[in-house]
Length: 353
Image 1 (cartoon, rainbow, N blue to C red):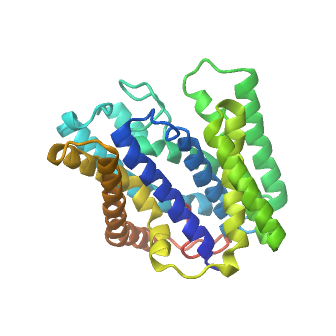
Image 2: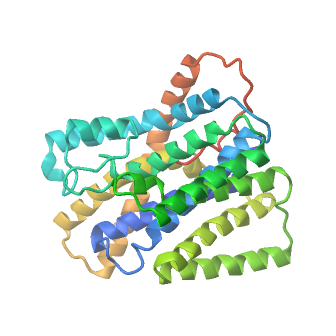
Protein backbone atom coordinates (compact mmCIF):
# COMPACT_ATOMS: atom_id res chain seq x y z
CA UNK A 1 0.00 0.00 0.00
CA UNK A 2 1.04 3.56 -0.59
CA UNK A 3 3.12 5.20 2.09
CA UNK A 4 1.23 8.20 3.45
CA UNK A 5 3.70 10.98 4.02
CA UNK A 6 1.06 13.05 5.80
CA UNK A 7 0.51 10.36 8.43
CA UNK A 8 4.25 10.02 8.98
CA UNK A 9 4.49 13.74 9.61
CA UNK A 10 1.54 13.62 12.00
CA UNK A 11 3.10 10.72 13.89
CA UNK A 12 6.27 12.78 14.27
CA UNK A 13 4.24 15.79 15.41
CA UNK A 14 2.35 13.78 18.03
CA UNK A 15 5.56 12.30 19.46
CA UNK A 16 7.22 15.74 19.47
CA UNK A 17 4.19 17.13 21.26
CA UNK A 18 4.64 14.58 24.04
CA UNK A 19 8.37 15.27 24.19
CA UNK A 20 7.92 19.04 24.37
CA UNK A 21 5.27 18.82 27.08
CA UNK A 22 7.34 16.48 29.23
CA UNK A 23 10.44 18.63 28.82
CA UNK A 24 8.42 21.49 30.32
CA UNK A 25 6.49 19.61 33.00
CA UNK A 26 9.71 18.05 34.32
CA UNK A 27 10.87 21.60 35.07
CA UNK A 28 7.63 23.42 35.88
CA UNK A 29 5.56 20.64 37.41
CA UNK A 30 2.47 18.79 36.25
CA UNK A 31 0.18 21.62 37.33
CA UNK A 32 1.77 24.23 35.07
CA UNK A 33 -0.97 26.26 33.32
CA UNK A 34 -2.35 24.57 30.19
CA UNK A 35 0.36 21.88 30.09
CA UNK A 36 -1.67 19.32 32.02
CA UNK A 37 -4.64 20.00 29.74
CA UNK A 38 -2.68 18.88 26.69
CA UNK A 39 -2.18 15.36 28.03
CA UNK A 40 -5.59 14.21 26.78
CA UNK A 41 -5.03 15.98 23.47
CA UNK A 42 -1.80 14.09 22.88
CA UNK A 43 -3.47 10.83 23.75
CA UNK A 44 -6.48 11.58 21.52
CA UNK A 45 -4.19 12.25 18.57
CA UNK A 46 -2.23 9.03 19.14
CA UNK A 47 -5.40 6.97 19.32
CA UNK A 48 -7.08 8.59 16.32
CA UNK A 49 -3.95 7.95 14.23
CA UNK A 50 -3.82 4.35 15.43
CA UNK A 51 -7.47 3.75 14.55
CA UNK A 52 -6.93 5.19 11.08
CA UNK A 53 -3.83 3.09 10.42
CA UNK A 54 -5.48 -0.17 11.47
CA UNK A 55 -8.21 0.35 8.88
CA UNK A 56 -5.72 1.54 6.27
CA UNK A 57 -3.55 -1.57 6.58
CA UNK A 58 -6.40 -4.06 6.97
CA UNK A 59 -8.52 -2.81 4.09
CA UNK A 60 -12.24 -3.28 3.55
CA UNK A 61 -12.43 -7.09 3.44
CA UNK A 62 -12.42 -9.62 6.32
CA UNK A 63 -8.96 -10.65 7.48
CA UNK A 64 -7.23 -13.13 9.78
CA UNK A 65 -7.55 -12.04 13.39
CA UNK A 66 -4.63 -14.25 14.45
CA UNK A 67 -2.32 -12.84 11.77
CA UNK A 68 -3.35 -9.32 12.73
CA UNK A 69 -2.58 -9.89 16.42
CA UNK A 70 0.76 -11.54 15.61
CA UNK A 71 1.82 -8.55 13.53
CA UNK A 72 0.71 -6.09 16.17
CA UNK A 73 2.61 -8.02 18.84
CA UNK A 74 5.77 -8.02 16.73
CA UNK A 75 5.40 -4.29 16.18
CA UNK A 76 4.63 -3.29 19.76
CA UNK A 77 5.99 -5.78 22.27
CA UNK A 78 9.79 -6.13 21.73
CA UNK A 79 10.79 -2.48 22.13
CA UNK A 80 8.29 -1.97 24.95
CA UNK A 81 9.81 -4.90 26.80
CA UNK A 82 13.31 -3.48 26.29
CA UNK A 83 12.37 -0.21 27.98
CA UNK A 84 10.19 -1.88 30.61
CA UNK A 85 13.08 -4.15 31.63
CA UNK A 86 15.45 -1.17 31.60
CA UNK A 87 13.09 0.77 33.88
CA UNK A 88 12.69 -2.21 36.20
CA UNK A 89 16.45 -2.63 36.51
CA UNK A 90 16.92 1.04 37.35
CA UNK A 91 14.08 0.98 39.87
CA UNK A 92 15.45 -2.17 41.53
CA UNK A 93 19.15 -1.25 41.56
CA UNK A 94 19.01 2.56 41.79
CA UNK A 95 15.67 3.38 43.45
CA UNK A 96 16.86 6.86 44.44
CA UNK A 97 16.57 7.88 40.78
CA UNK A 98 12.79 7.69 41.00
CA UNK A 99 10.24 9.61 43.01
CA UNK A 100 7.15 7.51 42.28
CA UNK A 101 8.34 4.36 40.50
CA UNK A 102 8.91 1.33 42.73
CA UNK A 103 9.99 -2.13 41.64
CA UNK A 104 7.95 -5.14 42.71
CA UNK A 105 7.75 -8.42 40.85
CA UNK A 106 3.95 -8.33 40.39
CA UNK A 107 4.16 -4.75 39.11
CA UNK A 108 6.92 -5.68 36.68
CA UNK A 109 5.30 -8.86 35.36
CA UNK A 110 1.85 -7.30 34.97
CA UNK A 111 3.48 -4.45 33.09
CA UNK A 112 5.15 -6.86 30.66
CA UNK A 113 1.82 -8.59 30.03
CA UNK A 114 -0.16 -5.36 29.51
CA UNK A 115 -2.36 -6.16 32.51
CA UNK A 116 -3.93 -2.99 33.87
CA UNK A 117 -3.27 -2.77 37.61
CA UNK A 118 -2.66 -0.32 40.42
CA UNK A 119 0.95 0.76 40.68
CA UNK A 120 2.65 0.54 44.08
CA UNK A 121 2.78 3.79 46.06
CA UNK A 122 0.88 5.99 43.57
CA UNK A 123 -2.06 3.59 43.06
CA UNK A 124 -2.37 4.95 39.54
CA UNK A 125 -3.31 2.55 36.75
CA UNK A 126 0.07 2.66 35.08
CA UNK A 127 2.81 0.10 34.37
CA UNK A 128 6.33 0.37 35.71
CA UNK A 129 7.23 2.33 32.56
CA UNK A 130 4.57 4.94 33.18
CA UNK A 131 4.24 5.89 29.51
CA UNK A 132 3.03 2.37 28.82
CA UNK A 133 -0.50 3.10 30.02
CA UNK A 134 -1.36 4.25 26.49
CA UNK A 135 -0.13 0.91 25.16
CA UNK A 136 -2.61 -0.85 27.43
CA UNK A 137 -5.30 1.01 25.52
CA UNK A 138 -3.65 0.06 22.22
CA UNK A 139 -3.73 -3.63 23.15
CA UNK A 140 -7.37 -3.30 24.17
CA UNK A 141 -8.16 -1.75 20.78
CA UNK A 142 -6.23 -4.42 18.88
CA UNK A 143 -8.10 -7.21 20.64
CA UNK A 144 -11.49 -5.65 19.93
CA UNK A 145 -10.49 -4.92 16.32
CA UNK A 146 -9.41 -8.56 15.90
CA UNK A 147 -12.74 -9.74 17.33
CA UNK A 148 -14.58 -8.15 14.39
CA UNK A 149 -12.01 -9.16 11.75
CA UNK A 150 -14.48 -11.57 10.14
CA UNK A 151 -16.67 -8.65 9.01
CA UNK A 152 -16.32 -6.29 6.09
CA UNK A 153 -15.11 -2.79 6.97
CA UNK A 154 -18.50 -1.10 7.29
CA UNK A 155 -20.13 -3.59 9.68
CA UNK A 156 -16.78 -4.04 11.44
CA UNK A 157 -16.55 -0.36 12.35
CA UNK A 158 -20.20 -0.21 13.36
CA UNK A 159 -19.69 -3.14 15.73
CA UNK A 160 -16.47 -1.62 17.08
CA UNK A 161 -18.16 1.73 17.69
CA UNK A 162 -21.17 0.14 19.38
CA UNK A 163 -18.89 -1.80 21.73
CA UNK A 164 -16.84 1.23 22.75
CA UNK A 165 -19.89 3.47 23.12
CA UNK A 166 -21.67 0.80 25.18
CA UNK A 167 -18.66 0.40 27.45
CA UNK A 168 -18.52 4.16 27.93
CA UNK A 169 -22.24 4.36 28.78
CA UNK A 170 -21.90 1.52 31.28
CA UNK A 171 -19.09 3.44 32.95
CA UNK A 172 -21.29 6.55 33.11
CA UNK A 173 -24.53 4.96 34.25
CA UNK A 174 -23.18 2.20 36.49
CA UNK A 175 -19.70 3.16 37.69
CA UNK A 176 -17.89 0.00 38.83
CA UNK A 177 -16.35 -0.30 42.27
CA UNK A 178 -13.40 -2.26 40.89
CA UNK A 179 -10.53 0.25 40.47
CA UNK A 180 -9.36 -1.26 37.16
CA UNK A 181 -12.62 -1.41 35.20
CA UNK A 182 -12.97 2.39 34.81
CA UNK A 183 -9.79 2.27 32.72
CA UNK A 184 -11.77 0.53 29.99
CA UNK A 185 -15.20 2.01 30.69
CA UNK A 186 -14.44 5.58 29.68
CA UNK A 187 -14.58 7.70 26.55
CA UNK A 188 -10.92 7.47 25.52
CA UNK A 189 -11.33 4.37 23.29
CA UNK A 190 -13.85 6.35 21.25
CA UNK A 191 -10.83 8.08 19.70
CA UNK A 192 -9.79 4.75 18.15
CA UNK A 193 -13.28 4.35 16.73
CA UNK A 194 -13.20 7.87 15.31
CA UNK A 195 -9.86 7.16 13.64
CA UNK A 196 -11.23 3.98 12.07
CA UNK A 197 -14.09 5.93 10.50
CA UNK A 198 -11.64 8.44 9.06
CA UNK A 199 -9.74 5.47 7.62
CA UNK A 200 -12.93 4.07 6.12
CA UNK A 201 -13.76 7.41 4.51
CA UNK A 202 -10.21 7.64 3.15
CA UNK A 203 -10.27 4.14 1.65
CA UNK A 204 -13.58 4.92 -0.01
CA UNK A 205 -12.26 8.12 -1.59
CA UNK A 206 -14.42 10.39 0.54
CA UNK A 207 -11.54 12.52 1.83
CA UNK A 208 -11.19 15.13 -0.89
CA UNK A 209 -10.34 18.79 -0.55
CA UNK A 210 -11.03 22.22 -1.87
CA UNK A 211 -10.10 25.63 -0.50
CA UNK A 212 -13.42 26.11 1.26
CA UNK A 213 -13.18 22.74 3.02
CA UNK A 214 -9.61 23.41 4.10
CA UNK A 215 -10.55 26.82 5.46
CA UNK A 216 -13.55 25.45 7.35
CA UNK A 217 -11.53 22.58 8.76
CA UNK A 218 -8.74 24.93 9.82
CA UNK A 219 -11.19 27.11 11.73
CA UNK A 220 -12.74 24.03 13.36
CA UNK A 221 -9.31 22.78 14.46
CA UNK A 222 -8.40 26.12 16.05
CA UNK A 223 -11.78 26.35 17.77
CA UNK A 224 -11.56 22.76 19.05
CA UNK A 225 -8.03 23.31 20.33
CA UNK A 226 -9.11 26.46 22.18
CA UNK A 227 -12.05 24.67 23.77
CA UNK A 228 -9.88 21.67 24.62
CA UNK A 229 -7.29 23.65 26.59
CA UNK A 230 -9.76 26.12 28.13
CA UNK A 231 -12.66 24.12 29.48
CA UNK A 232 -12.64 21.16 31.85
CA UNK A 233 -15.05 18.24 31.79
CA UNK A 234 -17.18 17.08 28.88
CA UNK A 235 -16.85 20.28 26.86
CA UNK A 236 -13.07 20.23 27.05
CA UNK A 237 -13.04 16.55 26.16
CA UNK A 238 -15.21 17.23 23.11
CA UNK A 239 -12.79 19.96 22.03
CA UNK A 240 -9.79 17.65 22.38
CA UNK A 241 -11.64 14.91 20.51
CA UNK A 242 -12.57 17.24 17.65
CA UNK A 243 -9.06 18.68 17.45
CA UNK A 244 -7.48 15.25 16.96
CA UNK A 245 -9.99 14.17 14.30
CA UNK A 246 -9.71 17.50 12.51
CA UNK A 247 -5.92 17.39 12.48
CA UNK A 248 -5.89 13.91 10.95
CA UNK A 249 -8.40 14.95 8.30
CA UNK A 250 -6.37 18.06 7.53
CA UNK A 251 -3.10 16.24 6.88
CA UNK A 252 -4.90 13.66 4.74
CA UNK A 253 -6.46 16.44 2.68
CA UNK A 254 -2.99 17.92 2.22
CA UNK A 255 -1.35 14.58 1.33
CA UNK A 256 -0.82 15.41 -2.34
CA UNK A 257 0.45 18.90 -1.55
CA UNK A 258 3.05 18.04 1.07
CA UNK A 259 6.71 18.12 0.12
CA UNK A 260 9.30 15.66 1.35
CA UNK A 261 10.81 16.66 4.69
CA UNK A 262 13.37 13.97 5.30
CA UNK A 263 13.99 14.64 8.99
CA UNK A 264 10.28 14.78 9.84
CA UNK A 265 9.68 11.57 7.91
CA UNK A 266 12.50 9.83 9.76
CA UNK A 267 11.09 11.04 13.07
CA UNK A 268 7.74 9.60 12.01
CA UNK A 269 9.44 6.26 11.42
CA UNK A 270 11.16 6.56 14.80
CA UNK A 271 8.13 7.91 16.67
CA UNK A 272 7.67 4.73 18.72
CA UNK A 273 11.33 4.78 19.78
CA UNK A 274 10.98 8.47 20.58
CA UNK A 275 7.85 7.91 22.63
CA UNK A 276 9.36 5.14 24.76
CA UNK A 277 12.84 6.60 25.20
CA UNK A 278 12.33 10.34 25.52
CA UNK A 279 11.42 10.33 29.20
CA UNK A 280 14.88 9.02 30.13
CA UNK A 281 16.58 11.70 28.05
CA UNK A 282 14.40 14.45 29.48
CA UNK A 283 15.07 13.35 33.06
CA UNK A 284 18.83 13.21 32.45
CA UNK A 285 19.05 16.58 30.69
CA UNK A 286 16.89 18.36 33.27
CA UNK A 287 18.89 16.95 36.18
CA UNK A 288 22.15 17.88 34.48
CA UNK A 289 20.91 21.43 33.92
CA UNK A 290 19.82 21.78 37.54
CA UNK A 291 23.16 20.57 38.88
CA UNK A 292 25.32 22.63 36.52
CA UNK A 293 23.31 25.85 36.20
CA UNK A 294 20.61 25.74 38.84
CA UNK A 295 18.67 28.71 37.49
CA UNK A 296 15.06 27.84 36.69
CA UNK A 297 14.15 31.13 35.04
CA UNK A 298 12.26 31.35 31.77
CA UNK A 299 15.42 31.50 29.67
CA UNK A 300 16.92 28.44 31.34
CA UNK A 301 13.67 26.48 31.04
CA UNK A 302 13.51 27.29 27.34
CA UNK A 303 17.13 26.33 26.69
CA UNK A 304 16.82 23.12 28.70
CA UNK A 305 13.63 22.16 26.86
CA UNK A 306 15.27 22.82 23.50
CA UNK A 307 18.21 20.65 24.53
CA UNK A 308 15.83 17.89 25.62
CA UNK A 309 14.10 17.96 22.25
CA UNK A 310 17.31 17.83 20.21
CA UNK A 311 18.99 15.12 22.30
CA UNK A 312 15.84 12.98 22.58
CA UNK A 313 15.22 13.12 18.83
CA UNK A 314 18.82 12.18 18.09
CA UNK A 315 18.66 9.32 20.59
CA UNK A 316 15.38 8.07 19.11
CA UNK A 317 16.81 8.00 15.60
CA UNK A 318 19.77 5.96 16.85
CA UNK A 319 17.54 3.59 18.85
CA UNK A 320 15.22 3.12 15.89
CA UNK A 321 18.11 2.28 13.59
CA UNK A 322 20.20 0.13 15.92
CA UNK A 323 17.59 -1.58 18.14
CA UNK A 324 14.02 -1.27 16.91
CA UNK A 325 14.53 -2.05 13.20
CA UNK A 326 16.92 -4.99 13.77
CA UNK A 327 14.49 -6.51 16.28
CA UNK A 328 11.61 -6.14 13.85
CA UNK A 329 13.63 -7.79 11.08
CA UNK A 330 14.55 -10.70 13.34
CA UNK A 331 10.99 -11.20 14.55
CA UNK A 332 9.53 -10.98 11.07
CA UNK A 333 12.12 -13.42 9.70
CA UNK A 334 11.28 -15.92 12.43
CA UNK A 335 7.55 -15.65 11.88
CA UNK A 336 6.25 -18.53 9.78
CA UNK A 337 4.61 -17.53 6.49
CA UNK A 338 0.90 -17.02 7.05
CA UNK A 339 -1.44 -19.14 5.00
CA UNK A 340 -4.36 -16.90 5.80
CA UNK A 341 -5.11 -13.82 3.78
CA UNK A 342 -4.22 -10.47 5.25
CA UNK A 343 -3.73 -7.15 3.45
CA UNK A 344 -0.15 -6.14 3.11
CA UNK A 345 1.03 -3.61 5.68
CA UNK A 346 1.72 -0.15 4.31
CA UNK A 347 5.43 0.47 4.48
CA UNK A 348 6.33 3.07 7.05
CA UNK A 349 2.80 3.63 8.25
CA UNK A 350 2.77 1.41 11.31
CA UNK A 351 1.08 2.73 14.41
CA UNK A 352 2.80 4.96 16.88
CA UNK A 353 2.86 3.44 19.83
